[in-house]
Length: 303
Image (tube, rainbow, N blue to C red; front, side):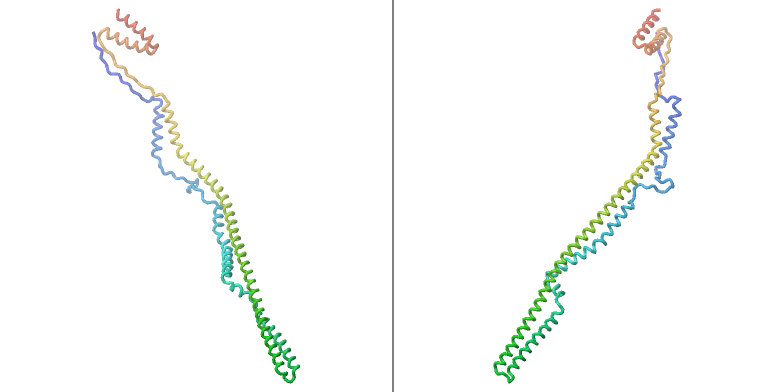
């Protein structure tokens, strides 16, 4: 019998020649992308730095100005209201604060005029008493004159007291009325200050709302432009990914080297032929074809 000898079976995979240029181009593109400068500036067409964050809009800045100016609008009124209220409280604590302001400066003149009139009336009565008693009239005339003088003093005292009491009461009433007016005025001024502040805040809020919409629109435009910029930066990488996917979906094929059979007997030759026929049958018709090849080899063996 002869001996079979030959090299071991070797299998390898490689890129078909028609795809090699395409793969080499991908490698070159990948290298270019990898070596690209990572610091790519985001600029406007004129080269100036592009805007990423939208600034405050003019309406928002105007709203800020309104808020800053509110202090000068409502604070004077508020301070006036506080001063009026404090003055009213002080007048309650010390009524003389306002009463003195309403004391009639002509009270003394009125009292003096009244006293003069009373004195004149007294003198007339005394003169009448003397005329009726031309020679002194004795003790009766003296008593009448003394009584008249006493009545004069009582009348002067009562008139003076009443005049001063009326002046005091009138001044007190006017002071109390002024206190109430101050309380009312202070309350109105305070309410007006609060109303001014509220109106200013509402106006500032309306301006700010309009400004926010303007700022939001500008920010949306900035975001869209930056998104377009990123798309342009990433376009080469996306294109390379598409090319790589195309290679991955392409069948690359394989090369198999069968061992070389050698021998000096008919059996060895027939064995090699049988191996080839078996492989061919398997490629052509599966198991049935393999069986036919075995029958052929049997006939060859008997010859």
